Image: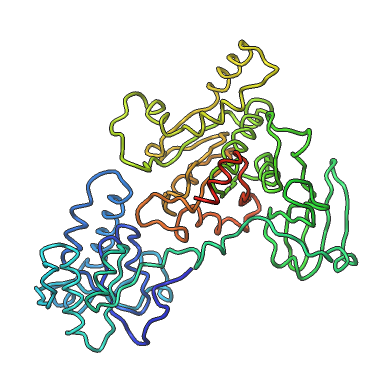
Length: 475
């Protein structure tokens, strides 16, 4: 994880925080280690203006205010003027930041350009940063803001400005764990002396020792040779990794006659995805891929098979964050489920594919659709807090639009016997201030990659149509 320390002059620094940093991550107050923080009074005003409501932004504004209140507890005016020590509750003394937080307690004059009137909150913060640069010549003054235009204006008037990067999971999204890797062509030759194999309940296992195993993760897929459309000469999934050895198991092939609710895998990654979705020992699955790679269709097919045929779960619950791509269409009438229907076009489209068969009569199709409708429920994320789901198959679509905190809130709703599947495309993020590197989906992929009961796969190839494939590449 990166922090706000790289590529800057040495020595102690003074960070001026923009309001959007605290509304994005209230714990940002405790993320600057030995460096000092300065809060302009307009930041406190903006936190107050945004504290009302039930949105994530409002909750974060309230939490930031609570943190500030805890820091100021018992302090007098002299203490505040001298700077208050920071320390996040629950942290040991060795982990606490050693810097101090300063509050603007008097007006500060700054020579802002005439084109930037100081009455606007953003310009007020810029003016404060300019004034601090004059009064704190012994420190490097840095403005930290999630607002790109704020950083542009700061750079234009000579203020060093940076994005808040402490919540970034990765430096580059291309470093995101893919969930599978190719084995070298001489893999068996180089490991043949330290291979054990056995069969158990129709499943084939191998114990492999060697340096390569140190880079493997639990439930990661391995493949040797082959191409995208045909089974490789060897495909397996890592079950356990111990020191310099690992136990792997050959995967099931869902590309042939062994279909899941009439759906067969069309490429290697889809086959790996079905292996994760159909494994009752895996409680948490993440799938990342562009539109048309089959994320929703595969997940629903596996869910229907396990709910209706195998009865491993009582019902399917599907939800997603309601962030509009264009202008919001306004109030939606009806119950919670009826309000969510317009957001669930992908669910309806895929259910239609799964419940249609050329061999079924109209009556059989209608009966199937009615049965499926009773076992598939649509729920809003807004009402998830405080709930516990028992023996449910939960599908969280468009997960890239959630923050890491929202993702934690949702995943911790899972009770015994529940499986959670998170789907998304990190290249299509609609939530303000979220990027590919700090999205909640990226966060959970990275944090769960070594847990024995979770799995991840990145779907690479679109299977929607030749038109959709060409449009994805050319447009």
